[in-house]
Length: 442
Image 1: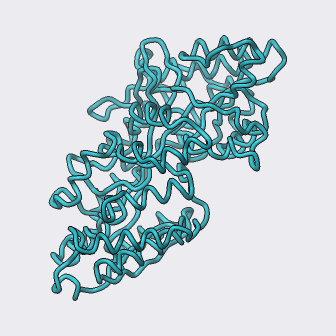
Image 2 (image 1 turned 30 degrees about the vertical axis):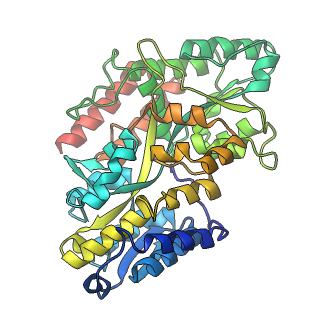
């Protein structure tokens, strides 16, 4: 799901936000009397960090004099809820958007580009490249990010030391050799934890492996290249197939292991290495939630032959509806709200910083890596230098298209079929490639 939030965050920083709002009231976020006289801004999100959102909205209303109608829906129903509202022309101005939905919503004309708002576009200079790219579709930008993260590579430092390993692997081959050594020492039956269950996380796991092997699923023109044995996907899939069936360093049950169960297994001390969302390190190094707390370290994503330490990133952003964009006053007010959440509220990226502090969720702006409070917070459970170094190498998924959902079903099944030995690597990737090109044509 690529979504960290499953409940409300605390209200403990409400006063801090309110103070920031007061300071911001005389700046760029202030509106003239005509704008303030407009209708309330209609704001819709999924039901995550609800208390934080509400407190930040209170500060916004206090600062600008604008009113906001705020509603939310559970993540599982959010996309369908929004589509129904878009089709029914329900009043919407600003909403949370997943990068996976951007092509669909833009093509349908439900959300509008923000390129015409200098007050919003100026934040691109401080945002990570893959964040900016993930908000663009057909040359236009559709919002400002407020949450981003990436697939990370973790290891149990203590287990490596017990096996006589002094440093984590830097390549996929080194990962194999270290895993065999750990397995031979009887420290772990399956040293490498990889979740390959059919769920929405799967494309992130697969993309990270393909990208680090120097590969792509599609080329710059959007045509499938995953079946090309020289384009990375073949090498990544073959590594997994061999790791499961030949070397037995990954459990054959990986095709039934979801991201959450994989997290629990790694946190229980069953594995030496794991691919997991970067934000999971907070849980893994929490003594109340993990048996290996204090032992989990992050290393750069292993690289394949001719590859790099690249990984896949994802993000969420605030978008503006075409309804709002069509009206000058509504558009101006919507832009103010988007800036308050996705840009700076006063002099700081308040909302992204608060999400990080309360939930450990990632941010997409470089400035926060220099923030003393952020640094001190992250030092409690991980290395912020490594966090930043890997984020600089994160890339957007290259399969986000209006037909992504349909293709993802075929692709995930193809990988699983190869892993369990019911298909060759070449045949699996050919099926995935053909499905992509067929859907693209239709």
